[in-house]
Amino acid sequence: MTDIDGNAVAAEIRAGVADCVETLQAEGVDPALATVLMSDDPASETYVSMKQNDCEEVGMRGIHVDVDDDAPAEELYDTVEELNADDEVHGILVQMPVVDQVDTRRVLRSVDPAKDVDGFHPENVGRLVAGNPRFKPCTPHGIQRLLASADVDPEGKEAVVVGRSDIVGKPMANLLFGRGEGGNATTTVCHSRTEDLASHTRRADIVVAAAGIPEFITADMVSEGATVIDVGINRVERDGESTLVGDVAYDEVREKASAITPVPGGVGPMTRAMLLYNTVTAASEQHGVEIELP
Ligand code: GUN
Image 1: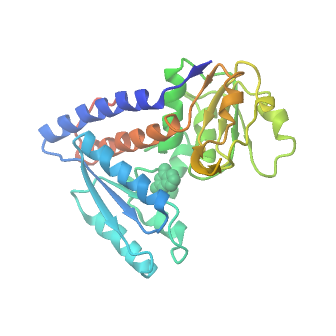
Image 2 (image 1 turned 90 degrees about the horizontal axis):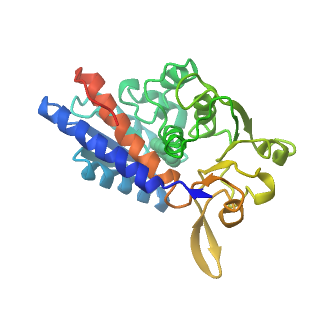
């Protein structure tokens, strides 16, 4: 069994992104990512501040806009419009989920597709599905890179994605069955209504667990030698203490898997690294400056 070290792979990508930032700056382009938060969820606050720290690490300008979670939804829509109009902002990320008074679809539609470094705008979702992505969504793209780092080529293999979210499950499936490097897998998407989930996951060479249920994937559900990718980040109480677990029962599944991602230190750092990657891509496209992406 091999642990797939997301921290190490993400550090390599950040180093490559830092080189791209230097190239852009030498050409007079100062790449910038704007994060927007309209939520009182402490986990979201943490994720956004980690994303801002990442910007600093690679020498990229990071701008953060906090919208009061009691404010009317218009404040969020207006913020996005201002960032769309700002030529010095190249990437925009609105942290999900947003507060209830906001229409999530409207926000996703309102981000300029050229700055939509999450890849959530309907135009960018359409391009991904059509096999011509502008920005690959960060988590699934990071997972493709993790598989490559473990020498797991999905081509011709059975991949099972557990979860059908817009952020992970759907784009992950598209990348896995799509043409090109890191794709060409025979891909099944399972979800909360799937009957006999284990009959699908046991068939899989690659399992991507993105159901949002703590330790949902147990050892009896995976085949010997499978590659297991755990997207879950679940806070649970254990022996009176709060701890983070994934969607995979790590200790028992790692005995059967040939490679597995830990939580934390697996998928999470990759999601953030690919956000930086998409931001330098956006800056490069907006200004016609060529960069060598990592
Ligand atoms: N919330 C959880 N994951 C993500 C993500 O990748 N992007 C955004 N914007 N919000 C999220």
